[in-house]
Image (cartoon, rainbow, N blue to C red; front, side):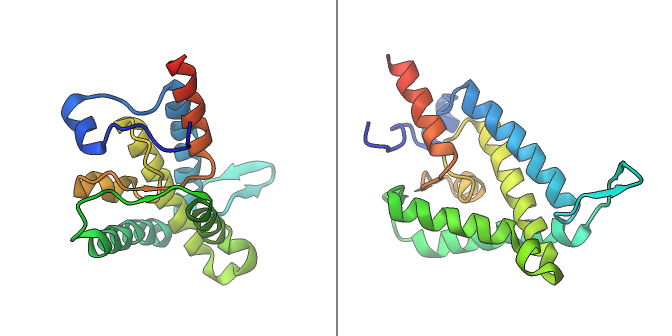
Length: 175
């Protein structure tokens, strides 16, 4: 297999009800999505007080996570509004760039503590995207899941974690 995604588009998916991901990919997206949302809603901070976990809602991270989704949607639309063919940035370069963007955003609290909310916002955005992908059964990387759904597109950016899982499941079901 060349590492590309299945030929079923998100538009076809919504019309025909077919899922592009299997049970492992779905479960992985649900678990990771819930963990990221939980982490993000707390502003990417875990607090232990006297051995007990304390939940602390961080509205700024949630609002910025929603704002991040809006920015990605606007950028996606602006960049590809005149392009009818789907974007495919699933090679080594696209996947590597996506990986470093994810790491830089999620780990912002580690290298810039005053900007902790950036990590929380990214976690909210990626968590919500993963849950939407699990519900819809789409293989689009979490970066474009929401905007693909809203815009009715099937653009793909390489996902360093989910692409290998999805490809293994595709191979397993093809045999």
